[in-house]
Length: 239
Image 1 (cartoon, rainbow, N blue to C red):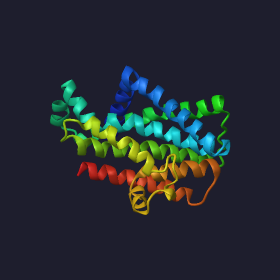
Image 2 (image 1 turned 45 degrees about the vertical axis):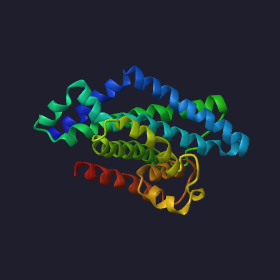
Image 3 (image 1 turned 90 degrees about the horizontal axis):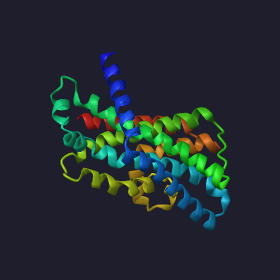
């Protein structure tokens, strides 16, 4: 219970801090709307308005990854800059119990990106998202937030050796949403890319969200794969 209380308190504290950050708040407002608008114009010109629903879902999840990739990658560097890293490392609590809630807080900020993008699509472009299976749709969104936060945790401990961890996080932004099939179907990518996409939790979370919205087979298996990979990221990051 003490560890759970610490986990929840740390997550809530950093969620409040990120919510009041002018930099992170500006990105959370601007980027998802920018992604969605560009994607809507491109796909509507090329494929017509029928594909805008899946595009809206992909653009919404892109916002979650954008909100997490840079902030989570540089989480330890940010603590070092603030002068709190030494205190966190020297505390009796395992560092993973402190760092994981921080990266989960950054991905939780991405929930705003999902809501804002879907509202933007609905009222500006007239895109309606039918939710065929609300439970699967909700589990997919939770899975996306958890697996992206867990992946951010792994990136934070892997990139801390670099002085430019935030830049490495920025470099991973576009390849990940491309490989995970947020906007481009994975079937259109080269065959050697597909095994990489299977190892990325957002791929399965995106599949679960689309299955929840439009119906589809194996939706619960996609959700299970999403949470399973999130657990693997956490264990690998702890190691």
